[in-house]
Image (cartoon, rainbow, N blue to C red; front, side):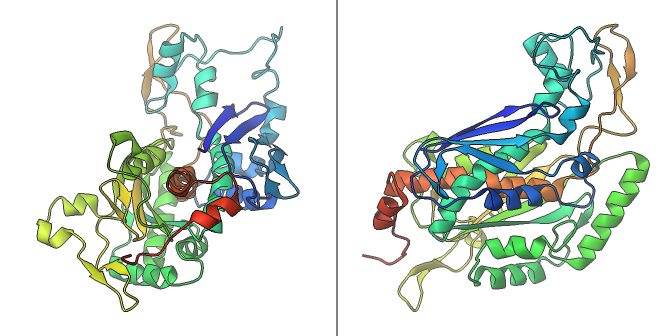
Length: 395
């Protein structure tokens, strides 16, 4: 099964990743991964760090002649900003005096992390807990994402709201998404269209309001969060299982999205709206298409029932809180002096919801790839292809 590990600090030499368990024969290139890294860096409201870094990956092992070998895939992304942090983030002991950070920022891992690990310098927490880590997560997860694409499983996303600026006419957007899903790219077409917007919104009126809100927020020294939506198409029926809690696909997907920094809520399908309705208004009726395939008249369940994929597109939504680092800081304490102070400002974004949606696309990929391998099995793409079935006919 596929698993991945990341290592590295925000201002260290770079980020390192290992992807283990990939079947042999998956075509992959640095250029393919770099396109996803580029998408992660986009979005109106990003901070100064994005002007410094142009994230590119180096594949060090596990790929030969453009295809995975079955061995662990080793990746590295080097931090350009490391040149400005060589003393403060030195690996070996140094005689250079470095200021210790002792004022935690509300909303961050600073305070709890420092107390948990016994640090007298919060820098150790700041640099590892940073969302900079997601650059390597996107790189790692893009490898199994390519495996999914090999079998026609496509992932896309778009932004529903930023602050109070949200899509009002959801029916029009849903109609557009429906047309996208019928295209060759499937769910991926949603991202192609969303990427044309600075805030990755599929509604021009909402886009205009969101950009205005971010501009206003920046002047105030504040930050904004929002809600994004991820679509996955081409998923065969029966991935995941109901037999054990930890093998349920919906739980695994929710955990993956929830693991992204600043994400505080996950919804599958119309979960929260469904909670206000009658069952007769919620559940997706089953019928047969003209091709005698099992289909649903609606998709309120978001493609998941009983912990398993039901053959419909998987729909996930994530709620990202406003970024915790504020240009006009909130109150805190100095852990060294124990006095009340204002929290410190560390260079940050005003809004990163568009980027968070791209990260969410990435992190669901290994979950789905593992579910695919669990059901069909195979140590190589060729073996997996012989076993793969995606039809929804009654046999």
